[in-house]
Structures are given as C-alpha cells and as structure tokens.
Length: 474
Image 1 (cartoon, rainbow, N blue to C red):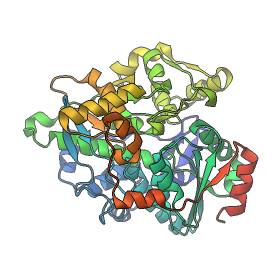
Image 2: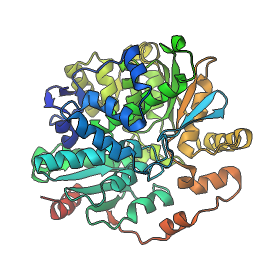
Image 3: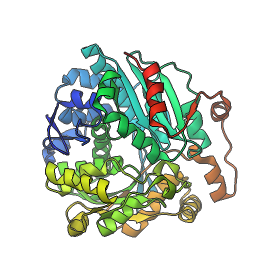
C-alpha cells in the first residue's frame, strides 16, 4: 500500500507516513487507493477477537509490517488488561433507538486510547527496526494529549512535546497529563486556544529543516496510523450489531453512526469505513457551539474561526475551529484531485474560507454525512434525560452526539452513538446536569491531588523552538 499527499506527491508506505506527520508540501497522507471489504470478507472477520480484527483492518493499510509483527503489536495494544471490558469495545442499548459504542474502556477513559495504544506500539516497532528516535510534537484540546502520553510514556526512543490551551481543559484532563513525571513527556500549556496550539504544531512541522534536524513526528489525528486504527472499531460495531441477524439478512444491512466531532478525525474514519464497503447509511456529525463543521456540511462554506471567536464550552475536547482532517474528506470530495485540493487550501489562506457549496448536494446523498449543533443547555438536558429515562450516564461530548442523533434516528436503522469519554472526566458538568455530586473514587482523588509538571508558555513560536531544541532526543 503506497501513500500520497492530498496536495500531490508520493510519500512511501505506512511506516514512512507513521513517522512523518504532515507531508513536505503541507498536505496529509492518504492511501493511494482504499481497500475494499466484500460480504465474504466481513463474514470472515465476524469470528475474530478485537485484537485480531484490528490486525486484519490495519493490515490492509500497513502492508510493510509483517503480519506476525502486526498481530503482536495489536495484541500488546489491546490485550493484557489495558481495557476494562473483555470485548474491548462493548455495545449497549441506551434507549430512543440508540446504541452506545463503548470506546472509553482504555487507560485514560477516552476513545483516543483506541488509536493511541496501537500507535505507541507501532512507533516503537518502527523506530527499533530503523534505529531512529522520534520527537512527537502534538496539540490537544483535552483527551488526545493524555492518551498519547500514556501510550508513549517511558519509551526510550520517543519524546513527547504536547501543547494544550491554558485553562481550557477539565481538571481531570489536566491531571491525567500534567501529573506524569516521565522524563520523555513535556507538557506545555500555551496562552490561547486549541487552534493556537495546532497552528504552532503546523508551523514547526512544515519547516522541513527544523523538522528533520529534530526528528519531529505527530500523533494528532493527522497521523494516518490513528485513522487506520479507528476504522477497525466501525467495522467491529457493524459486525456486533448484525451478529443476531439471520445470515441472509446481514449483507447490506445499514446502520448509522453519530460522532461528536472537533478535528474531524473520528468521523473521517467512519467515512473511510463506508467507502471500504461497510453498510453505513448516515454519519451524523455533532458539533458544539464551535460549529464550523456543522456550518460547512449545511452550507458548503468552510469558515474557520480565529482564536478570539473560538468559544470555551462545556464539551472542551470539541473546542476546535480549524479541523485538520477535513482536508482528507475534501480530497475525496474533489475526486481525489491533488491540484484542486491544494487550490482549495490556497483559497483558505487567501480568504479564510473555502466555498464548496456547488458540492453541497453530494454531502448526504453520496457520503451520508449530516450534521447538527448542540449547546450547553442541550447537553445538560440530554445528560439529565438519558439518566432519568434510561439509567445511562453520558459525558458532555457523547451527550452532544446523542442530542444531534435524535433528529436522524430512522425505523429499522440502528443508530450507533460513539462514546468519547467516561463521565467521571467531567464531574463538574455532570453535577450541574443532575444536581448531585459524583462521588470520586480513591484513584481519581489521588490523580487530582498528585503534583503536576507543566511549563506555561506564551503563544510564541521562537520560544517553543528553543524549548524543543534543548530537550529533543537525537
């Protein structure tokens, strides 16, 4: 499997793009072609455990990793008791025609663990094989940072430089990151919002001289290794829903997915799963008040906001106004034409907007993508109603997904809501919604009370360059 940039040019194979992050021309790595899954393929996958399924799906993209090595990496990522649920991704009925896809059973209680645990194993494997080191430069709005750091902590060939926006994450999220004392983990709290952090990462990552001198890589969702690992749980969820159907009814049986979305990586994986042959009827994109993506899928106009207009909300992991992964979808929308994609992003740089309204009719009819917005009051009421009516406790981001999903539930089409995190990570909001205080367990109290190690930094590119230069592995 070869990879190309969304803006043109060959990038090599899976292991190459795993280490590189952004393409030299600023584009994102995408497969030269998407593999296809037939009905027979899906039936063969049905009998596999989650680590085995992940091996099969990721193996379609990572053809340069020997299958026995990949199986070992997936077993290490998803086995060994790292995930609380035996099946890794449990499915449960939450009422109103919806099923919760339990993606938050991992070590940091967030769906990001599903990809990061694999990525940590894969990076170590590739670096050992090539006798290299890697300095990960990333940005987080909440859960990505802790999942990446917990997957990479203590690894000899990797250092992590993780940027987060000062005061924009929950206390639990900050504690999960900043309490880590490993020498290879560097937390940097930047003055500003997530998009400021993300822009700093992009500026350093597109400076090829600095990137190569300091062996910079990425674990944000621009890393295709994460996307490939996330495709696996869409396949798993479809298989589990159709397990109870007579074999004759399984082929082509459609489900819909509701996906809380900030940086567009999670739902992009669903888009790829659908393109590969998983019978997905709708991909329901749920935005919070920073609803740039909702506006795009309703109007065809992509208008990222600046830092001043990016709101701090009660679903902070979605406080994103410039979705990095949207470029991969636009690449497909524009017929996988790198010249048209590059022109669209040049338009964005010139006008702070991309006008793709001429393609609007295709968003739902061809790609199945619909969207909606959830507000603070919406998520409070959604948490309250699901708790009272169905005995289910949702975190604020998953509540956004459930709220928007309600408008798209169809008879005979299961609506699968992707869980993003455990409610305990957002205890203050749960308390506000339910009027009762969540009783913290001893482990959580110890985490919140642990000493924290973080460097506060101005939104200053030169200061960040100097910080990395002094501490990067070489």
